Length: 416
Ligand SMILES: [Zn+2]
Image 1 (cartoon, helix red, strand yellow):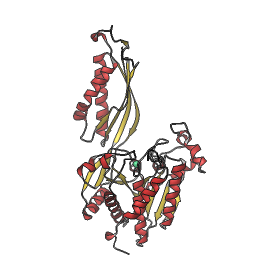
Image 2: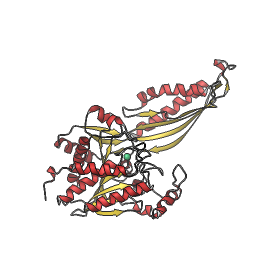
Image 3: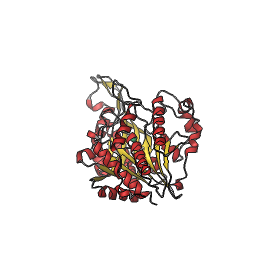
Image 4: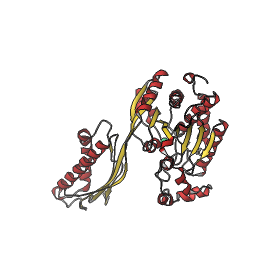
């Protein structure tokens, strides 16, 4: 067996895979890729990947959630290592979100197999279904993590009301089989994922590698401040219950709340707001807005939640408004495995690559897998921090660097 420490990925092959897969589902007018989960284009992408797995001599398998796997069998039956991401896209996507992690995982296993490396632990490439959320998101990884139930399977639908079950049946799959995709966590040692950063940090700091230590958790609220709609001319300024002024006060307090109750990893965003009734000559009687709050610590998230509630109550009292909110979603933060983080750092150093240890501000399949097994994530820089658009790009040299870090880390971790 060859000494794995000299093993390198074949960048030419990675390039060709990325560019070929980018043509599947590409719209020639806006150059965007439309490979949303379980569309014909997504299924064509899955078939393309299956062919590449077979060409590479890896064992091809598809589970009940239509996750596609390619396996390089190890010499022992120790828990296996999974590496992957997703190949479904948002509408009008770029070529790398998800796809890069799958192509890199494939290349790592392919390189080891062609050099006749037999790892001690089995290595499995996995491309998860519907990460991007046509039917809610993370469907494939949630199925593997055992977080799907028959009720959800029967009711999950896209924005046009198309049921996931109908789409799966249309392609010849039984939706209930997704329940069989659940794995025993004892059979998995680690899940690793390489992903584009989708933010500006690595690009600005000119570092080719990001090593994720924590994946952010979040809560999102819908908030209502109710006042009284009234004539903009006849209602004196001191006799108004102006709902928009309540929102303006609150927006102004967000930085102070983050400073006092958050961490340097806290983020809060009011991304959507509606002023009602919405007439230029009417004092607003109602504002409805969203609040998206993120941090890598569950304790900090709780503190922020209570601080935001207090601030909104105080503003409502001061402005004579009624305050209501509803929590729309909650996702727990997940810490990456210290052992994997250290291995990624060590391999980056040995390859002479500058890295930055950082949180992930976005959710990925790794977050779901992190609820059942120890995980690790590698980021590569996104040019200008752009993502979810045809402008999304990463320099080939950075892709090569990230892929080699992944290859070396897999080689080490698979030695049991
Ligand atoms: Zn992604």
